[in-house]
Length: 145
Image (cartoon, rainbow, N blue to C red):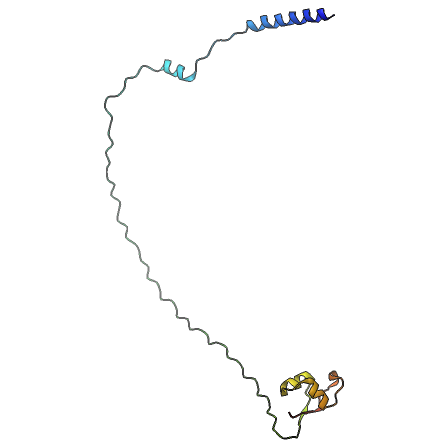
C-alpha cells in the first residue's frame, strides 16, 4: 500500500513539472530601458546659460493717517468714606445708673453692646433670668462701672 502512494505522488509531481515548464512569458523591459530606446541620442551642451537679475522697483508706500480724537479724561470717583458711628454715651462717674427703654427690634445683646458692657452684667443689674424675654417698652438700668 505504501508503494502505491509513492508511485501516485511521483506521477503527480511529474505532471506538475511538465505543466509548469511550458509556462513561459516574454520579459518586459524596465521603464528606463524603454524610454532610452524611444528617445534619440542627445549631445551634452557646451555652454551654460547665466541668469541676469533685473531689479524690480516697487511703488513708494505713503501711509494714510487718520486723526484720532483725544481720549476723554476720566475723573476717578471719590472713595467711599466711613460713616461715623454714634459715640457711645459716656457714663458719668456718678453712682446713679442710666435708664434705657427697650425699642422694637432691640435685644439685650444690642443694648449691652451699645453701652459697652457685658450681657451678664446687664442681666445681673436688672435681675433678668431669660434674656429673650426683654420686650419693647421695658425699662432697663445700665450699671455704672
